[in-house]
Amino acid sequence: MEKTAVQHLARILRWLVIITFVCNLLVMPLVPGLVTQLVIGGSERLLAAVRSMAGLEGLWVQKSIWAYLLEVLTCFWRDSLVCVVTLAYWLCGTCSALILWQAKKVLDTILQGSPFQMANARALKRAAICCWIISGAALVRLLWWFWHDGTLAPLFTYTALFVPGFFMAGLLFLVMSALFRQAAELQEDQDLTI
Image 1 (tube, rainbow, N blue to C red):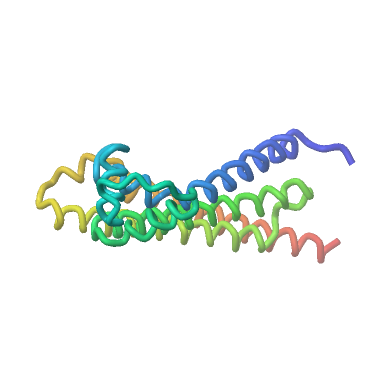
Image 2: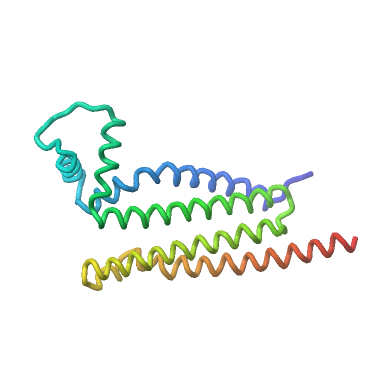
């Protein structure tokens, strides 16, 4: 059977989704270090803070990379700001990985030539829920940031854009889920009629 232009595009998109999914999973363990670097302010200050927290200030100890990483990971959880931001990023990263996985599942059915399935409607509904979780996490982080800093400055950050952006993306996924569900029901009726 000859592949359609949509299936060729779906194959390319599937590979892009898989690459993005793998990159997302690879970056997740780096989140605490990134957050700490942003909160503390720079690589040199990060290294000094880790040495200070680990009681190694003034010492030049040669360690394996794994011992150093374990030490760094345990130091992150001592600061409440780093802890809250790290957990928010991990929640959003997990949800984005789930959204990518649902997209891969939908693209797989397109490659099979039968996209109008109830499984696709369920996958798009799961993606909508993940979008709303990201939007909720961004809202909680924004409110916490207001309380922590006591200013309106967080309104001018990308986090403020996540709230309506992911909420609307969730609505779009929900509409697409309803369309796929309706198309799957029509497909089943047509298959039964023939």
